[in-house]
Length: 144
Image 1 (tube, helix red, strand yellow):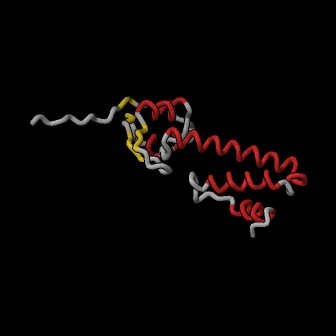
Image 2 (tube, one colour):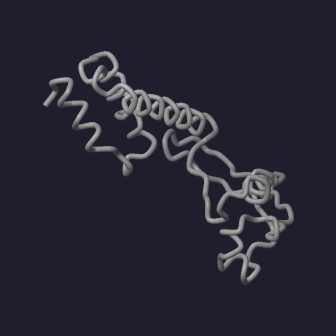
Image 3 (spheres, helix red, strand yellow):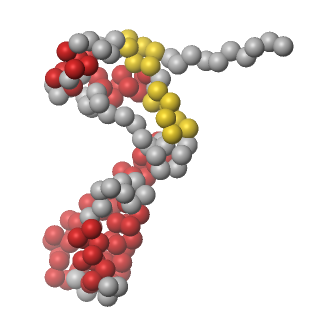
């Protein structure tokens, strides 16, 4: 029986001189620890899907977008996109609240939808909950 070949992770050269200023202050830069990017498999933290932070994505993320070299992927593309959409909706609600707080305090639909979004956020960042805001909304909705 012939052995099946397993694909080796792809790697491409790294250019640490293209990293952000912050990343050029790290031990990885100072001691030239990262000379190449290699495909890094991971499971999506939210849905569990098997994913790969490809060498090409790493090069783009660290050298073009200038993200921190210590950044690691935790979401698949679909969950990442959903988290950004949810963040944007939450920002819209916060902005509306800042501008129209008095009128919105009795808007049950607005308050309920905002609370629902905050509760959905727990799926993405369970350790970064706005407990005070959730409690305020629950109180305004008469849920406490």
